[in-house]
Image (cartoon, rainbow, N blue to C red):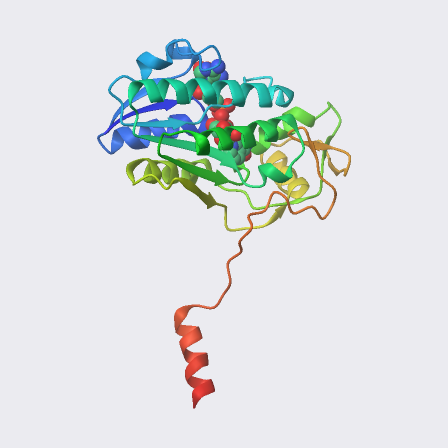
Length: 253
Ligand SMILES: NC(=O)c1ccc[n+]([C@@H]2O[C@H](COP(=O)([O-])OP(=O)(O)OC[C@H]3O[C@@H](n4cnc5c(N)ncnc54)[C@H](OP(=O)(O)O)[C@@H]3O)[C@@H](O)[C@H]2O)c1
């Protein structure tokens, strides 16, 4: 399979590139470091020549992570990527989005919603993975809101997931038949965001206190305490088939 990973030098992209190559796929990396700019469109068409699948894991510019730029970034880049895919005859677009984006009020999340809508409306068969917060992104979140003395974060529930699990799921989607829809992935545990940040800082021997603050922003969005926007819409139960069958037998006895 011939694949281009747009954003293939990033946290998720580099993992996707490695996994696909390990699997024997021919993989090209498209990012500004390889001469491709998805915002201006420069180099995209060439990066998609002869390619079957495009995995788009772009993100707003490092290291500033200006979340306010999110809407213009994702809208413009996604239009450029889809246009170049259509012109190159790409057969499957695989995207990555955020669970709850439609419930979160910031330009970053408006950008993710716009991206999902553009992908869904495009004629290119697609699969979109929607995930929760990556464990690996907690330090980035902290850096974004930290002062020299403390870190303020909203005390909301999250169910974080690892970048390796996200990358592996993207690769599975890339090798499969397009869903023409989305697939959701979340980690196994609920955390409060401030408690998770506290653990991450402690592991780095960072003694700054993490203060729960309902006025603090999450990637530009305001979340009140008790807000469950960052959680997936589904939850696991504990009833296995064997347990259910046992209960049914007991009831009918
Ligand atoms: N934060 C979370 O926990 C979370 C949760 C769910 C989903 N997501 C989504 O996951 C995706 C990937 O995130 P990530 O953390 O892996 O991102 P990342 O590490 O910041 O990587 C971003 C990638 O985009 C490339 N890039 C940026 N601007 C570009 C441009 N104009 N043209 C071409 N390439 C450009 C970067 O490479 P260059 O610098 O070389 O251009 C880099 O390869 C994002 O879409 C994000 O919304 C994130």
